[in-house]
Length: 368
Image (tube, rainbow, N blue to C red; front, side, top):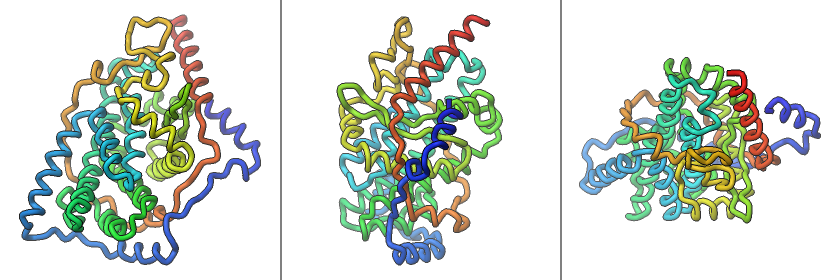
């Protein structure tokens, strides 16, 4: 499937396939910000003031409360975006987190489960859940610091280190506080969160051997089943998004995040926003197409896609604070741009993927 897509794309003129590149700031601003990033150091306030201490306590409490599972995280992102629409990343995170929930329930659904050995189901879920939880654990305190800074009209970003946030984000948040440059902040958070999970889960031997290097995971990428989908509200919900390739490569994931941002805020915003507001996230793909999916295991005519709460309990995480990923300047240039893909509608592709999976499932049932 993916090979065919690549072949067909290669036959098109370059002008029809090249993504539109959008700059996040003027070059003079980038030079100034780069200088600040290269000189940033960790300086924790030695004597916290009472208001700072109370803010830290509130943020840690609220982050823990919402970091229960994929459902609570996804909802928290959306509610935050309603309160702070200038934080584009929060809405992007909400839509991507929906995909995380769908991927989790796919492991128990009628299409993917037949191809996944029973002894692999739990480790695949743990991988997806841990990545989802790690990003929230790192990003949500940053969002809340901005919330309190805005509420009290006072810059509190010197407290980022108390939440073990990378030094990379300190100049970024200070810059955003002054400029309200939403695209730059979004790209910076994409870079930060992907590097954050790279050093904490993507390079962990257990997940490399039991998930990322497995035949099933690699086959999904090659066949084009690793789509990140953004539903668009309408009489019949359409799908936009990006197919992820080489998921274990941090630069590829950053590029994917930039493209998803371009699609969401430049191409499909109104339809995606309406969908998000009208459709509570359940983890089941019936959220997208209730005439194709069902959360009822006995529904023979529809594809079984269970509710997340029915198949996966809350997972107890232990967050170990590792080293700051920001040790060199190779990620700084990534701040300058993001992309608006020329090809982003995936409705037919996803329909074809579902059909192909059904055929594979039927073949498997016949030969086993």
